[in-house]
Length: 363
Image (cartoon, rainbow, N blue to C red; front, top):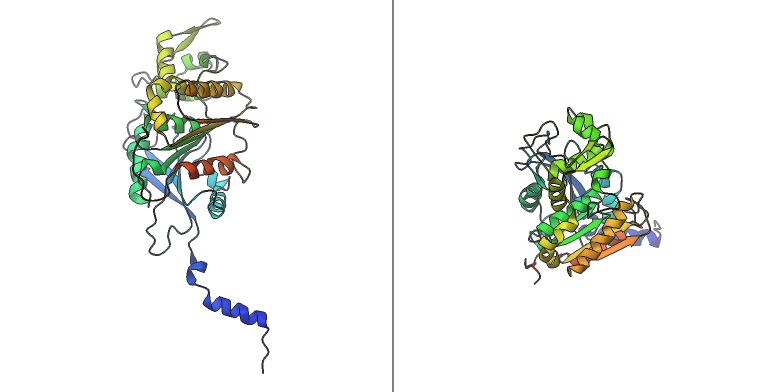
C-alpha cells in the first residue's frame, strides 16, 4: 500500500474542488488607444490631432459575460510628463490594484491623456492658435470613453484629477462643465491666481519680441512656458511667428505693460478671476479638493493657492483645501503618497459606483 501524507491529500482535494472563478479572474490591464480629434485639427503651431491615451481597466473587466460598468477618473498629468509616465515609472497600476483590493476605493476606470502642444501645456482651453482643447475633452474624449468602454455614463460617476498644470486643467474644466464631471481633485495646481511676483516678471521680453520663430523662444524656459499661456489666452492666428498678442514689452530697462491685454489675460487665464462667473457650477460639484506643498521653491504657488482657497470661501463654495509639508510635485505616488492616501479615498466618497446614478446638479 502506498502511503500518502494527509497534507498532500488535503492539497489534492482543495485543488480538485476549487471553483474555477477563484483562479481565473482577469487581472487589471492598461490599454493604449488613439483618437484623431476634429477639434485639434485646425491649429497654427503643428499640434498633432492624433491624441494618445492610456486606460486602466480593473481586475475582472474582461471576465467572460461581465456586464459591470465602472466610474471613470480622467487624469491630467503634469505638462512635462508623458501621458504613460504614471504607469511606466510611477507604478500606478499595482497601486490602483492594491487600493481596490484593500477597499480604499471601488473598481474604477482611469484614463490618462496627452494634452500638450508641441511647445508645452495646452492650458485646457479653446484657442484659435493651439486648438480647441476644452471641446476635445468634453465633446470627443468623454463620448469616446463612454462608447468604447463599460463606463457609467453620468457626471456623478466621472471625476477629474490633475497634477500641477494638470491640476489647473482639472479645476478649469470641472468648473466650466459640471454637467459632465461631478468631482474634481487638483494636486498642487498652478495658475490659480496672482502670485508674489507679477506674471510679466517671468518671461524674457527681449527674446519674445525679437523671435523670428517659435524655436527662438525655446532657449528660455519661462519664456517658453508663458508663450504657451499667451497662445492659449491671447491668441492671434494672423500674427506669425508666435501667433499671440504680447501683453508687455521692454523700453530700455523699463517694462511697459499693456493694460487691456493684461486684463484680458487675467480674466481668461487665472482661476481666481473665474470664480464669480462659475460659482454656482462649483457649488454643484459632488466634491472639490485641491492641495499644495508649503515648501514649494516657487512661493508664488503657495501664495496663490492660499488666496484661491479664501476666495472660494468668500463665495460660499464648498471645498477642501490642504497645505501639506512638502514641495512641488513631491509625495504623490506610492502607498504613502497623496494619490493613495487622499485622491482615491476622495473619489471613493464622491463618485457613484453603481450604474443607477441620476444626473442631477445639486441645488
